[in-house]
Amino acid sequence: MQYSSQSVAKPYFIAAIGLFAGQVLFGLIMGLQYVIGDFLFPAIPFNVARMVHTNLLIVWLLFGFMGAAYYMIPEETETELYSPKLAIAMFWVFLVAGAATILGYLLVPYATLAKFTGNDILETMGREFLEQPLITKVGIVVVALVFLFNLTMTMLRGRKTSISLVLMMGLWGLAVFFLFSFYNPHNLVLDKYFWWWVVHLWVEGVWELILGSLLAFVLIKVTGVDREVIEKWLYVIITLTLITGIIGTGHHYFWIGTPEYWQWWGSVFSALEPIPFFAMTVFAFNMVNRRRREHPNKAATLWALGTGVMSFLGAGVWGFLHTLAPVNYYTHGTQITAAHGHMAFYGAYAMVVLCIISYAMPILRGRAANSEKSQVMEMWAFWLMTVAMVFITLFLTAAGILQVWLQRYSSTPIPFMAAQDQVAIFYWLREGAGLMFLTGLVVYIISFFVGGESKARTA
Amino acid sequence: MSGTFTKSMARNIFYGGTVFFALLFIALTFDSMQTIPKRDNRANLTPAVVAGKKIWEVNNCIGCHTLLGEGAYFAPELGNVYKRRGPEFIKAWIQSQPTGAPGRRQMPNFHLTEQQLNDLVEFLKYTSEINTANWPPNIEG
Image (tube, rainbow over all chains, first blue to last red; front, side, top):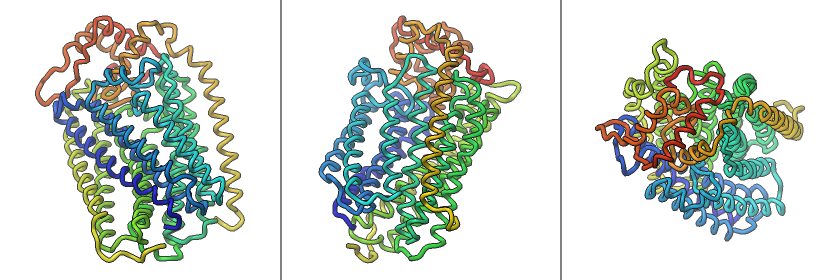
């Protein structure tokens, strides 16, 4: 570790992994509820499990992004963090607020939670992914602002690299677009229109800046390729991301009461959205092939390459699969969407966070890389989780195609639940793949506790 | 990436491209705001609909159902449920939950009053009359 204040990243990474485990467990509960409908009912109804599953995902990724930023910014700016104390304080605020929110979901009926957390003052709850109570949303804004203040102050007095600039743009964008979660008009069409300004402009916009900069940082470290080259790639990738992704928002404006010209704008621009992901894959492989050093951390390199490939498949290919308006007319809101969502989130965001953790965590623990034994285990975890996610996606895609046929496309469409019964076999298979994912996660967590001869200590 | 294409050129294209497409998006949004009133059924946005939307939200209906295709995929699409089932069926259905049928997906009972049920139905009626470019493809949603 070059700067002692980088160590504040450690609790963020640990929390991220812990919450990730929670997310996977609730995913398995939901997966089972798809086929055994009354499983854990009424203790944990599906909607509660889903809220916990998706909100934990968002929160652990945010912990990962914050940990990454606290690790990267001092090293990039070549200066200590402005205030390590503030970073630790915000860690506890965010963790306690996050845990309280999840417990609120699980222990109190949602309507009661809404009533006692100020939803009557400003109605923001009950919208997908933005289910958090008002006080939690305000808390997120406070934590984000303090976090950004801390990092921006650090940057102002240090070296300003392209990687750190892109990272900060992504993080500021994340905070700014979250503000649209406070805008919930009574008019459903407007509600949905601006809801996407949080959801789409996050995951297909500013989050990709964060993704790109994390990946670029790790690639510089593990390959030793010239910073000029890597940063040039980074700019090219994020250019492609935003010139396709911003207007690409239109692929959500096909069927929600918005003007029909969005079918053209949305289809054309979002059809180009795989390009930046493809560029990212080429980038990762290219840099690793041109490496000027053999970094002892092979696992981190594997995660970096995996992020490129899986984000291209999940976000790029599976996104393209149903993004053209004439296709989306039939697939909108089916298991096809679920398939895409799973592989895209895992391939792009979960994997890049696991990548930076893989690179940084050994250094935070005082070594350049983990022991051979530990790395082999981590790589097993990589393959188990990644292959499991491929299968989850394939099974959901199969379920989705059948669902579309039975319920939407055939000349004698059948009701939703009748179609669900027909495709149940694929939900069972998906649950099996989910158990494989859990196995991978367990192996991943164990890999942190495996000893052996570790690679050279770093300063 | 040849030597003639430098990092600063890439950076300038990034800033220029981003600003251009962000402005284009804002322009399209302004235009959408002019067109949306013709499609969003705002004439029928009554106090009952507003109250119904809140009931929809505070019971996290979106956690299982889709509404105009957005939400969870565990339970049926409700954007057109008013047309598919009609008001009385919807109310009776909500009141009779959970079915308790073994192994079947269960919907909680939200203990809604008659007034709340009526408001929720009004919200679903309003939603079903939004011009969605003929989506969903058929009445099954």
